[in-house]
Image (cartoon, rainbow, N blue to C red):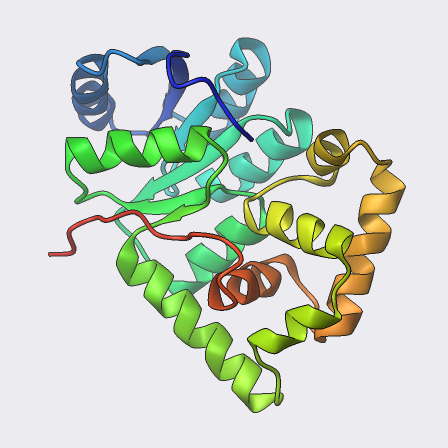
Length: 230
């Protein structure tokens, strides 16, 4: 997904703490290419605003009332597949990261990131990259490599994939929904689903989160933004 560098990036802030939203707004409004188009304090509100405002990126907290940020992410991605959702959370538990990936999040950033690191992550997310804080990316790489080793697989297994399957794998790992992948590649959603099934069978991988970890471990996608871990 190539974007013009001069294009302004519309952002929806989703966090249940007003002081956090205010802080994020002040930090991001100083960036010349970023516009805050809305704020949501619940997951349901985030979904509703995403559907009406169509922001380029939703900056999503996890712990929110009425509907948590992970489920809100899934509903947004289902309703408007071209919206990119970047999780911004104080929690980096494996379960949260796995579910965020499975639900179509384009990345997972920790809240202690600086304003520069956050704006850089937003731009990379907008450009179509998958963005994780280094501590999370390293953990994903380690987990997938351990999984590959335990099953006798390696990066060389990508050689068994067709060119189209590699394209689909990369877009899955970048957080693309079937509808968006189909549009990007000029194929039907049914064909995307077939390629996804073939990928899982060839790689002996059975869920989106594991496909993403495989793509990271195999070097198919660039996965991490330089965020200082303290």
